[in-house]
Amino acid sequence: MTELLLGTKKGLFALEGEPGSEFDVTCRAFAGEPIDFAMRDPGSGRVIATTTSPFYGPKIWFADDPAGEWTQAEGVALPEGGDHALERIWVIVAGEDGSLYAGGDPGVLFESRDGGATWTLNQSLWEHRVQEDWQPGGGGLCLHSIVPWPGEPDRLAIAVSAAGVWLTDDHGETWRRGNRGIRPRYLPDDAPDDTFQLCVHRMERARLDPQRMFIQFHGGVYRSDDAGQTWSEIGSGLPSDFGFPLALDPSDPDSAYVIPLTGDFDRVTPEGHVCVYETRDGGVTWTPRGQGLPADHAYLTVLRRAFDRAGEGSSLQLYFGATSGDVFGSGDAGGSWFTAATRLPPVFSITASV
Amino acid sequence: MALVCVHGPLRRLAGGSAELEIGGATVEELLRGLEREHPSTAGWILDERSCIRRHINVFVNGERGSERTAVGSSDRVEILPAITGGAT
Image (cartoon, rainbow over all chains, first blue to last red):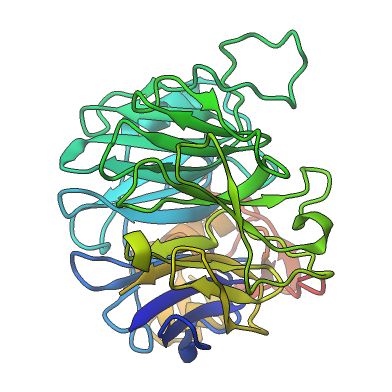
């Protein structure tokens, strides 16, 4: 049985099912509230969800059962008396030592060591944020990608739109940039080579080769073979190298999946044709994986966190949701697709677990 | 002490009371006092900059107030979620 947790514009939805058939909606929580992200913590088994109430601001909540009682987490705030307020929590990721990380706007990272009940701001990264001129992307100054290093809990990479990639080897005590080779086409030609106004849309790391990382950028797909120090563009075989989501097969460091959109001027699936693209050679070639997906007048938008996977190898499951409220899945690594759900509110995020 | 009236989820966070007597010379002091008496309300009305959240309205004796609005001991302060939406 696969569980999907969907953050939507109007609540958290839990779905269960088997690949190939429509999933059952087992629960709707936070009815009417925007849910930015929800995940099941593999350590505690808890479900952690992030809300941004238009009235009461961003919060993190946790529950043992998404249909049960939710408790508000503590510590999810910036230092009082400053010039900034927390705007949104974009993502929560499990670390390698039982900790949890939360990333958000304005370019902030929190850590929890008690299963999401209490959170602490990463002060070192926050000082970079305050002292440097970080600029937001269209979605805000969002820290949306947090990628641990398998087996090494002190090593972490994060990505911020639009402040680029940041790396730490000492559990967040110190941070350095990891942006060399990224070429932002939205800046003037004479922009300095070391600019960090970099609109990374999503970043992931290969589990079996942690030096290998991938980025879906604001125009460009990139690969790093040195743990995010330098990047090479690999999007030339795609119909468009603009998009947001990105997923990897944990069993294959050469794998990546992206869902191209037409461009930043028209953020829908190209030509009304929904298609996932797969590489199995590190981005040298890309193969369309669209069997079973809408191919005619389907102008979908898939947001950056609305794509996830479960399992690996030939039984890799892939799931993505669109702002149309449709959710699609594959139980065979993208070879074929089925409709997991329809007519839900606009999907902000998906996490899958088996 | 002013009479503070809370609505919606704030009522549950304030221990179930619709009206609370809280001291403070300004709206901000009053709201910080509410947070001290009911810590669960912290972050729900004032943000980290001590600004009233954008879609929360505070009325002092029926007049729209801000963080710096003076409050007297016999004043009535209503904290209301704004009428908003229509676009989402």
